[in-house]
Length: 270
Image (cartoon, rainbow, N blue to C red):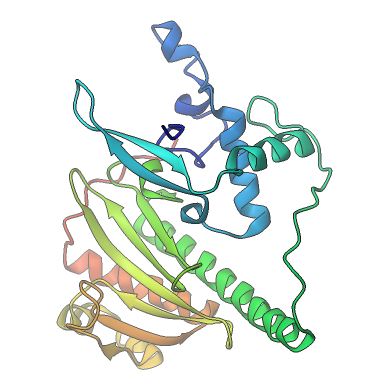
């Protein structure tokens, strides 16, 4: 049987009661830190170092129980736990905190032809630039909507935004708002590594976009009607850099403010 790990593995946050325990909890269980705390922090570090999304390393699945289905995390690779232990040792992770800045030597990929390496380097440079645009875009969306952004669904609570990252397989990422029993699409984007930009799609109707987005933003963004081509994402915007990402975030906020999307109430930040 595969090893079962917590559904929220990879979402460690210092001082979060689910991670560090609740010092004013009523029971020993409430006060106790998660037994996966160091491995969870190591997983966060591993994803940061390798720039690979959570889905590359693990997957989630349900198992039946007397109380109903329970969700667990399972490793995609046999050496996953070994990789976590390497991070724990290399960075002196204790109680979920990094105590050493000693770098770790990651396993190198097999040698490739020089021309391929040059192209890979160019694409990776462009993809990194596109990632920076994406990070800025997601940050601005969270700020405008006044909602916390979780790195994946299992770490989100109702009202939070969360990211579905499929960049390693399709270059596609989507941002959702977690509801009670369903998720609400917000926006999606595709990395364009040759230009270092994004293609962004909005989960609003074309009519709502035209009616709700500021005229100056519409003139600048030159969005396209994408209805019927990508599910809930019906507005398409190309050639998005950090400047245009900020304009999109504000335009989306204005549309959602005018046309209520039915998102759950945002929980207040601590």
